[in-house]
Length: 317
Ligand SMILES: [Zn+2]
Image (cartoon, rainbow, N blue to C red; front, side, top):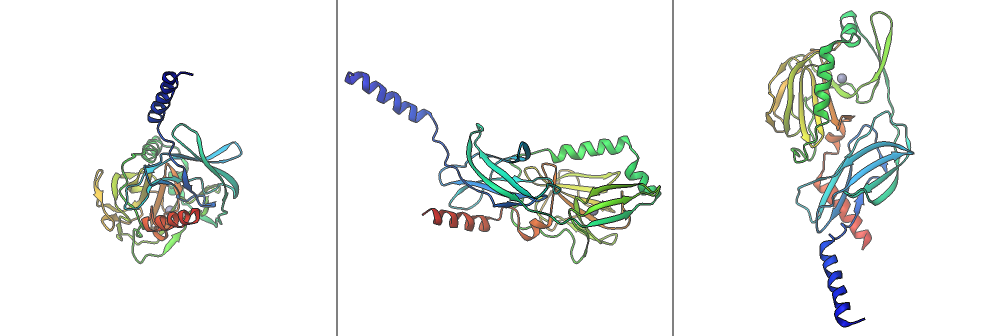
């Protein structure tokens, strides 16, 4: 092989190295057990660049959840991308498989995880004739409003990360009256029943109780609706929305930016209710998740995640 010929190959090889982007190092973390009806956070990190990834949770051939990462701007030695995994609260406990994929769908890492069991207490709710009609009888307005709120839940504005850290409760000093995930049997006035589960947390708030934003966000809905009464929906992060139902008065309007502690409205008993209360709900890509997790654990808690990553890096040596 002549020197000129081989040097041409060396040149080509060097050009190849320059052109083909370096494969992002897949340093990933996911908890070994994942909670149904919760905002499970999984991370990938690098000290060079933000790793872009998709994460897929499967059981057999069923995809339980599929999410894309978002870049999380924060003060940290690492460049951390995060994805939220939320799947239905009624998912049966047991083993499942988690896969991290790059933008081209190539597997970066995988791990076996356990879906934790959830205890779902059963609650009977007796509805009078008016409320039975409101819940059970089809109405085009209900359909239209359901489609509208579903469109909001499905909207993922990649750059709209308004809030991180711990959420506050939307009311102060008010006891809970129903938990997230409670199994519900509605007893209609004609003797028939319907089963469902509770998608939010209820507070036994008397009419007129101030309701505050639990964290920063953008008001994406402030309107009167048939089933949920006077309603506020806030976007907190890409795909993450909180809802406030049955209000007596709205104190914000569409497009308002809010910070934690801002007044959203006054609690009430509008829409489908059996008495005054505040219904607080959190959705990620449409999946209802337990809002109280964000009060106790917080959303993208920088300190918690940095401690976790530092301990993993130390173990790697
Ligand atoms: Zn409720």
